[in-house]
Image 1 (spheres, rainbow, N blue to C red):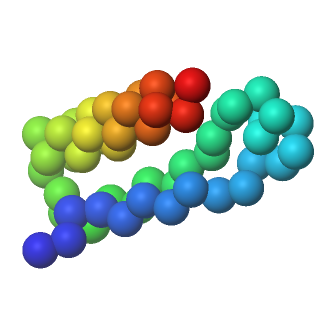
Image 2 (tube, helix red, strand yellow):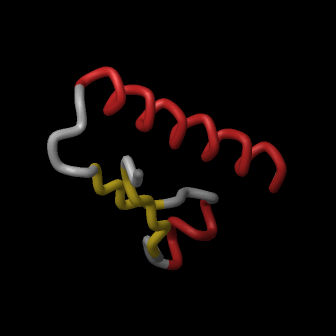
Length: 55
């Protein structure tokens, strides 16, 4: 069962040079509030881990 889909998109040269990323998060329709929050929290955590590894 797919809960959501995440894609990382090009935010432009300025954002890339500053280390900022832009994500698109699409949730499965009908996803409950608790799962919605859990998926969002997981995406934020993964971005923080990715950022830490790059620095």
